[in-house]
Length: 237
Image 1: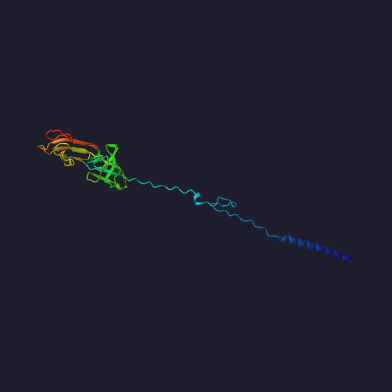
Image 2 (image 1 turned 90 degrees about the horizontal axis):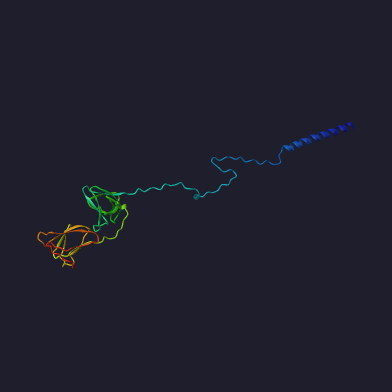
């Protein structure tokens, strides 16, 4: 009986030992693998956190850098009168307009416009800077610097005609210009249009061809020669 008791004790000890070993083995083996925590790698220059969602930005939402507007250099055209010369500045681009002033003896003016072919330029009168007129630049009496064709074309109404009429029975020579006005009986040739300016008439029938009349002619004015070189007075028909 003692022997049977000892066997039972040994059997119980073995069971306890085996149970303990089984428990340790169960604890050592995990039932499921743990989920690894992802590492966050910082991006250089990024301002958003890892949880922020990137928003697409269109090209129009981004202000463009300011671009400097090139400044065009205005073309300057100058006209200089020849030394000891004189260049008339007229109300319009032809000799039939009134004279407003002169560009003379090396004076210079700046042009701001031209006629269609660039032969006349619009500029101020040097002695009267608030007065503007036209000067002919196609002669030896002036020099021009700058690109004339870059100037804008300026239009102006036609000149108002001016006339000289011979009312006598003697032919009259008009100087300067050498224009001969026939007697009053020649209805066609007794009157002529002249550019504004100063003129003198000379009787071609009287002895010595004397001077008869000094004339100052302006736009829109008509002057009648009513006296001949003999002192006779006439009325125009």
